[in-house]
Image (cartoon, rainbow, N blue to C red; front, side, top):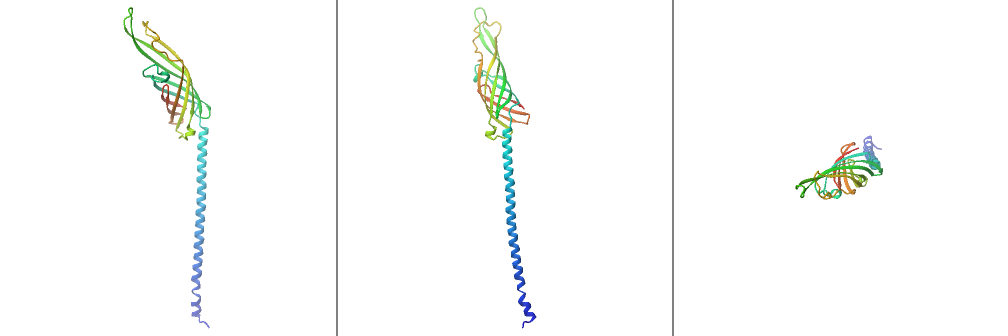
Length: 230
């Protein structure tokens, strides 16, 4: 027969064992729950990131595909006289240029243009009837034509603030030339401008805002810098 004291001592160790098992089960449950919560959170974040990247890529592609370059007025100023069509002049002279771009195809525009320059050269001449002195040859030229431009923004994945292009221009020139009064020498001494010309261009434009940009156009004829008005 067991005494009450012995029965109490016999069953007392059982309670701590059950408590320890319960605590271990709770810990495992907590760790498993934490693991699955972490995995779930990571998956949600990954999905959000993928969606954001996809949206950004789609938006960027959409911007490139919807970007228009036409309806742009370009006003430029250059220095010519040594290369290409203008090389016959032989000295520096300012050249003014204006064109207006129209969208024709994706990334491609056509721009009717007109340029203007005027210069003079001096020529020392005289004969038995006319005293030797300097006479001036004056020439005013108005090149008119069309410029075709292809933009490489989409190919280069350019920032929306920048445009990059290659172009070609074809046209003819209206020439008005004259000599000073009293000159009776060779009036073909200075070569006139050729009536036809073809130039190649490479350029870029920086958009200050949606309405105004600054462009640099490098050309086999006259390179210009100026304002683009959108």
